[in-house]
Length: 358
Image 1 (cartoon, one colour):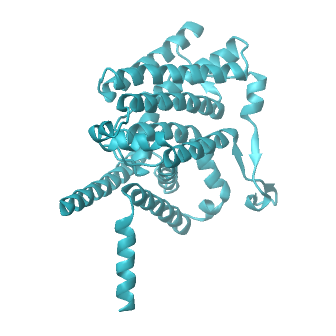
Image 2 (tube, one colour):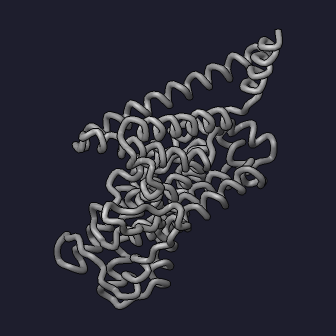
Image 3 (tube, one colour):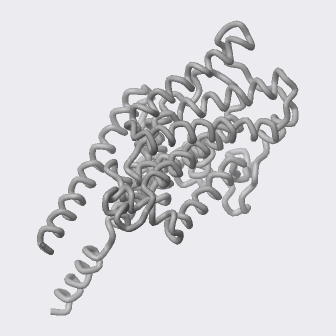
């Protein structure tokens, strides 16, 4: 009898969870299950704290871009121009620093301006002219990629990849923030190797915390969810739907600019081929993190775990000896299908609950 009461109490807790919380919980559990499986079956490499920190170091830019993508998807939109914006920002910053004697502050300003311009233009077209976000941002992606190539060709006369040798930039790029000593490891030769993170990780974590607070405790955050849930209902409640969608796209563009600078800070070079496919990885991370394509459901913490899950999948596939790109693509596709099925089940559960109330 007692066990029956416990089960019924657990059922009430689960059914009482919001869809966002439920999907986030599933994402977190899947991530820890994958990581634990990697530790148990693929050796102790995954036990080293630096392995986890490397995931953050390599994916700080993707995390920032995924946060912006999550905001837009919560409002029921999408932005596939972010990868092109990241590449354009990287190229412009690289040329400014390496060829025109620019400084870090100018590079940061260039990143923010490019991101804001894309966000404002695309946001206006989507929100106020009511053009489909996929079409608008597809045009933005082509424009950003084209401009990246044009800027490169204008400066060098051909399309090349080049490393930035600006001393001040290289010094900042090579900066490492050492973690507490107990997180370090000792090599086979007995040399202590401290665990570290890059500056971009600090920026990414700060953005995650800020956006988490915005979505959870501000009116603006509630407006994003309301617009994504149902435009007409939000309008009847006094929410300015057009301005909310515009704001989401502007923030997404701004974060693409910031992500572009963080990406540039990590890779230290300019190339028209940089950040290829980043927009798809950002969408995948958001979906894996529990953000619904239909809008109204999603979380920034989910985006964080979505990025970590995506990175873990890639590391597992690589550790198993399948280094070819298509194996990674196949595994990510399978994982996306799994989470889309889970989302469909959640939507079916929501619909059945609504019909019972009626």
